[in-house]
Length: 519
Image (cartoon, rainbow, N blue to C red; front, side, top):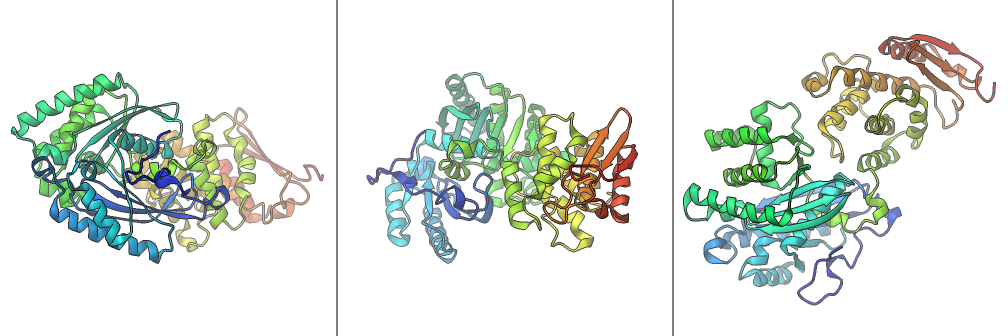
């Protein structure tokens, strides 16, 4: 695994100090990362479970440091001033949050500019922040590691587009392989002579060079970078897509082609306002769209996924031991949420064992969502009772959770909605129901009602030990075995919830008292 070299001679680079003090402290520590790109300067403060971190603070400024570099070879003077001011602010914010020293990295613009070293010296003198300049291939590797933070074990091609460069990195079996950097950033393309024909010819030639280096890449294409996310927003608008979560948003080659045509035929300002994209970002979208069209035509991926995780998350991933990297980010995040917010931390595992007979034939992907739902079933108890169902649904469908397809978000959200509510009519699920099948909807309802019932049987960690739920799908029979200790918990409300679960399964019921180890 590579490291970022320090041009000033520090042999440790910016990672001499771990981002977190140790495995036990990872869930509580915070770390700030600053990414100085060709187009934007951003501060991200990670907080929470180290494997699937939450974003405690996230701020960016569109400085366009790389604008005009093709002509002058120097950083944009206005952008340089704005970036320095932003870094002063970020340093003050970090001090106010009592963060460890910020990790600050810079990519293509600072790397290539004649006055890049002067800019770094100014920043160090004015703020005390040391900027670590990373090479193109290192940028590609870190971006791919950011993708691995959300998709451990992933395979495919990662494409990270910035303002002045575009990087490719291949992943196989969760590891980063070949990688390469190019000059296909939209800021450089905008300054390229020859108009549209000149840009098209340049993009075609460079893309062929990239393809020759990377070889066939027929698997998934992961798109990283603000310009790709802006194009995804346009794709959502064109398709009238109901869930406006960019991470794990999926496109295919046909949708990319249609969206590029849509961008070319639309009024850019009207499109910008409709999608809520900044003016600075939207001005680069047409150039990035030309690159994406050629990228997809050249590599012909089987599908395309938007990743909100990139170089900043890759910096965090850099410090994780392999054992932690291989953990499921969704399950780790849910475990952290349960330990922090649930009334009875650790109960999710017991609840999973109780409801698992209902899903004995399910595939691993479904079992994973069942585990997640059990861990999250009680984390929203502080919400007003009238709004708990909606709060659960919103948290699952819109929260920063890694390793979740949009359909899986809706499934998980619906299950948690039914944890608190029998009916979904009139809820926000109705806006998203087209993202999952009728079968998945029914399975999510069963899971949610099983959680709703199971939660009534444990008022302490051992109050219903020995209580068993059995499901006989061929006989359509749902059996409940209660122990003498748990039988008093099976009151009228619990019985009503058990019958509601049975109704969702279209099942007969059989309740047996006095069973179990203490019968």
